[in-house]
Image (cartoon, rainbow, N blue to C red):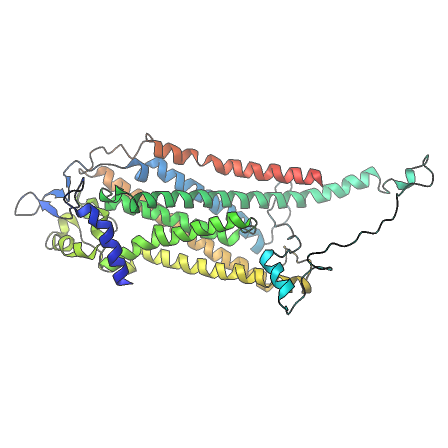
Amino acid sequence: MGNATSTIASYLATDCASPLAKTPLNCLTTFTDSSNSTVAYFGNVAFGTFQADPDVAGIGTIISFVVPSAILFLCSLLIIVPRLVPIPPLRNIPIPRPAPEPKYKLNRVEKWIANHVPLPYHPPYPYPLYSTPTPTYMGPATPANPDNISHYQSSLKPSESNELSAKKDPIERDHAFYDILEATMLCISDGQILLSLAFSMSFMATDNRCTTSQYHFKVGLNLWLKATTSAVLSFAMVRHYFRSFLSAIFRLVALIGSLIFSLGLPLMLQVNSGFASEITPSDHRGSSQIFLNALCFMDPSFRKVVVDDQINNQAVIGNCLTHPELSQEFISWAVTCIIWAIIMLGRFGRRATRPFREETDPSPDPDSKSRAVLMFWLFLMLVWCFAVGVFSYRTFWILNLRRWVASSPWIEDPSAETHVRTFGQFAALFSMASILLAALDQNVSRTEDEKEE
């Protein structure tokens, strides 16, 4: 594993370290004099010339990650709490509750297995898989006396029919509210995962890595971590995640790609290098090695250069972390991967055993309060608490680091990342409108289905 990560790190740094590169990679810290009291250069960055990157650390990009995640956590909380705490019916206020699941249908693979392989259970069908029941023709149902059709009208009086409809409406309203919350969560997780992949791709697969500072990379990494944690929570809670096979595969590949490519690869490169930049620079100084290139902290060949510059100079430039595997980002990523693996096994296990469960309980109650159901929702509550904890601390850390950089004398334009001016920020902000569109589409589609029924 160590040789593979070292090879990847060398590959990423080779083009940037070449003298023919547009901006050759430089990981040295240059001081103004022999007293080492003032820094003149961090790599190729001179004092007062550090360039801002609003598309990564701009306030518009931060908002496009923070606000949707907060909405996702609110939606998930509205779903979880009524499952754990009994809430009495409230007038004109819907309480989200899941609708009963439709009858289980075998997919193509399961149909083939059921027809060619002896199974220990019978498929939940009263007739063969590739045949249809023969209908019995009973003839036209015409009344004996066409002039008198009152016998064939509903025996319910209008007032009784209205009462039954009024009793049904709150339940349907609760089901609709639940579906809207799920659609909102799914839309948010899709948008943030794709946005994270786009940011990480622009760093790993393009020449931008030759000019991306450790500060901007750490901000992006923490944004990706928050987005991936929220997506794992959505993966755990949305019932119809695999309703469409192709879209489910696409979402699953994107989520796995974010876990491995956006987060796992750079974190493993830092662990293999054996050192990482400081977490947050002290407010008592305005210089830090986070202004160096991000690749300086991913290739072990740069360790001696970066660490040696800190000897007797920690009060001026800070010091590195010597155990990146104990960093908060790495631990949060590892726990997120474990939670995702547990949820993945649980989802496929539940789907594999569903035919058995339907034979014993053809109509399971979604409002059941059995011990297994309560344990499931309690597990989701713990996942929610972990995701909210990661989201809250990472957001606080990003805002605190942005504040420090904006007040540092190294940045050329302190206001560049505090105003929405670039296309990337506007695109990220306008993408949040898809959340409202997803909720409205879900509400309209359900209303149309009810009218057809």
